[in-house]
Amino acid sequence: MKRILFQAAFMLLSTTVSAQDVIVKKNGEEIRAKVEEVGEQSIRYRKFTNLTGPVYSIARGEVFVIRYESGAKDIITPLDRSAAAGKTQDTGIAAPSQQAMRQAVARAERRKRDKLWTFGLRAGAGVSFWSFKDDLKAQFGSSSEQVSFTSNPRLGFAASAFAERYFNRTGHGHLGVGVGYMQNGGSTEGTVQGESFTYDMRYDAFAVDVYYGMRPVKNGFYMRYGLRLQLPVGMKLWMGTSPNLAGLIEGTDTDVALDTWYDVDKELRKSIVPAVNLTYGYTFGHADIGLQWAMAFASPHQEMGKSPWSLSLDFAYRF
Image: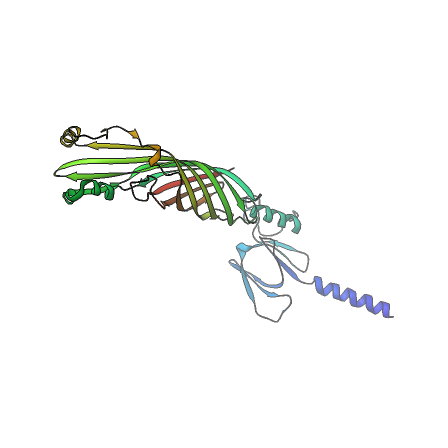
């Protein structure tokens, strides 16, 4: 008798547990509920654990399928719209299993981050500023008040290879290191009594970047900031003047050749110039495009120039 009562109670319990609707969201999450209404914009339901409690609502676009207690299924938002366009009722084709659906969702979430290490190439081009106004004023001495100075940009560029280590497979935070080549510079123009002259300086350097970045798994905005060590390997100077001023300069004892680039002595180049940089942009799959600002802590020249800075368009591609 006890055995018969136990079996009856077990069957009743099994019937009670299975007698419920299951709302399966597109991300694989299941909601055990009692569906009250399937509307055009939302689905209203009560939680199965509290059938007399409040009525909750969920947008149709978040729901993949509803499995009713009767065994029927109602596909709300097909995963493959092209194959099921306009069909919301089960047509007899077996719906994907829960395990297969979870695996598909997991693959989609990891699509941009299926490994913790990534490698790629980065390139950027823009304008760089490196002012020599204070140094030129000092050379003019007391007559510098008669000279007006203007700092102008020069074209700069950088290219590097990089590696990034992500903290987890969601891909939001990572550390990166890059090694490459760059060129920056600046131009200062002076005007005195209607005559003008231009003082240009540029330097080439190897660059080592160490940075922290935040970029989403899916397409969206990203940010990167870090430290750059510049190792100048070359520096050139160019000075040009108006014809009248050139005649006056050529008649003096000066070692500055006009209208031609010449190398600055190696002893006048600093060995290491640290800089900071900040990049903000947008991610397109494997590619990033953004705007980068970089500022050096000191001038690459031992004796002249202010700290150079640059603003450039940055492009990166991850393999």
